[in-house]
Image 1 (cartoon, rainbow, N blue to C red):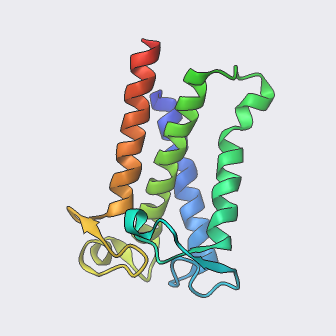
Image 2: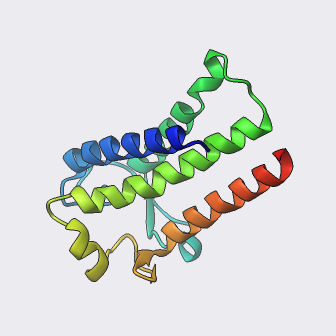
Length: 149
């Protein structure tokens, strides 16, 4: 990943977080939105009690947006796919963090001090799934560098 790619991804995460604050308000995890919900089969790993239609469709949309370059001349190969996946994981957990930082109902102090219902497990002050996302990002980066250096 280049500095430019990371920077652009962080800017996109910021603006989506600001949009999502407008959509969700203080009701995180689509609490007040009229969407379907199913019990999360991966709850022990990720921690979320449920998965919402709102989040599933956004995750699919992000996956498609991040693969957009492949349809306009970016070479589709394993190295580039792994870069895209790294940036996607970075986007997902940074966007979620920005939601808390910039949401007037939360803010950074509440993020670190208050229990977050949809992030029930914290490790070293951060939700468990942030660590899973970050470690996945590092693993993908390590494998990409190992295979393509």
